[in-house]
Image 1 (spheres, rainbow, N blue to C red):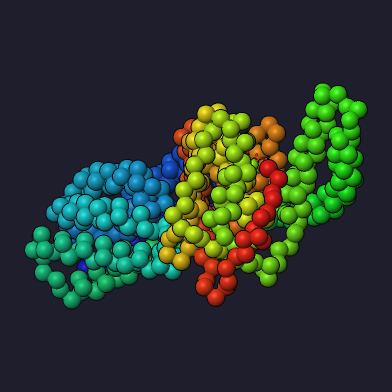
Image 2 (image 1 turned 60 degrees about the horizontal axis):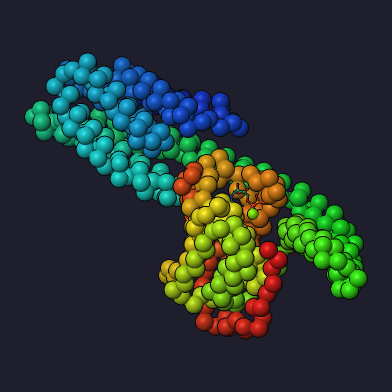
Length: 436
Ligand code: ADP
Ligand code: MG
């Protein structure tokens, strides 16, 4: 009985090679979900078979190899469906290989499958070091339990040389899964970062344009609006002429709103300006300011608030943020839908949950949220969400979105509550106006 280092190294290479290949092929592109699942199945199933072919034979029917690593990666990175397929594939291969070690291998596989289904639910929320640490622990236990359960069931004595082999085998599993998870996680972090940089670059370009162009347009528009308003007070106008002028004013206000959105993009926000604002009050004002719009779109808007929430922000911008989100929800729910905004305290934070039963979004549409000019509407500007996300960031808040096509969308914002010492908001200060 010898430690077959060459086989161990070969197996490590076989597990890691497809991951490196994946990163090289994918460098900048994205596969569709189905194609990615197919890739993971092909890679993991091939690696499992290769591991079995180059297995370390302890004695007739008892084999040690790294097959649990691709099996583990199949569940975590390919999803449960891929995981079950790879497990089924492994059962077939192990059955063909036969020998007395088959029963312990199946027992371990069954127990590990139960554990990994729970494990994967928490996995995506962990930090990279915790992911790596827990993966090593998982694989360490698995690698330990295969020979342990094997020797129990088969009644094989654990000799010194066997213990050393088991030790090397457990270490090989740990090292391989560490490298694999490290490579995959750093790759996904890198691509997330790249996406973020791309978004920010676009944002900067839009911001610069906004600052230079929008400001120039706004001045002549203000004087035009003033004269139109003056004209509309004239007594010499007929009823229809007056209605034309009011359409003029409405359209000028709409254009002004678009310019305001542009300008607030270019702004470099000063943290110092944040002050305690009554979020509950602003939220109810936002719903009120949209009441005629929701009536027009035939959408019922409900507001529930179980908490008097004070957060740090700038009243006008907080209202702008909420109005943007409610307005999108109304537009998605129209015609004859339902929108609900709820404020709820959660620990030291307040949650603002905006739900609609409207068109919903695909995962690709969700990914595009916040990109400048991204709009699926005929008359959309594609700036609302972008400004909203910027305001959330300024306020130190976070956001999440859940959406299903043709079912509806739910935006959940979370803001830290202002601490006692930070003062209470003056009501008069909050009488803000945001054009809708
Ligand atoms: P606009 O409203 O001018 O299109 P936004 O930035 O406000 O621009 O929104 C961008 C896009 O995000 C919308 O065109 C729409 O496709 C999508 N969207 C935003 N909110 C919702 C929602 N509640 N339901 C469905 N789609 C939404
Ligand atoms: Mg919008």
